[in-house]
Image 1: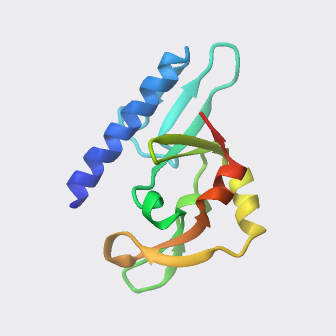
Image 2: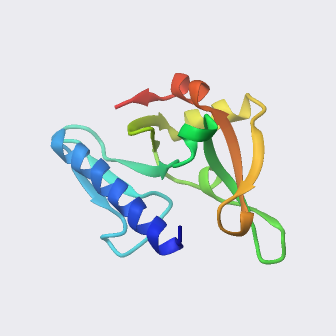
Length: 147
């Protein structure tokens, strides 16, 4: 897969989630449609509640590995580790899409849960520069809720 193909697939998944959210009676805006890329992907506005933000993740390999990959850092051009992903997001919730299911977890809860376990740490993504924490799918499902 190329970056262009991955981006198209991610945009399709984002559109599916937006359609589900809008179908539930909420207003939902993609930050990409606003022309900026803050530390979250979607802004959701319920009718009578405060708006919240979502960082959407699509884990294509979860069904084969049995793990959810959570980005926590990356290597810069000099090979130095810098924080990214979960470590820097300002989203209120993380939503993962895997095995044709949507799973949602409060971002602070996810950070707290990760700090209390000893996840497997691997490098992946483009040129293996992304630092990922692997969480067994069953454990992640106990932390999150399906919707």
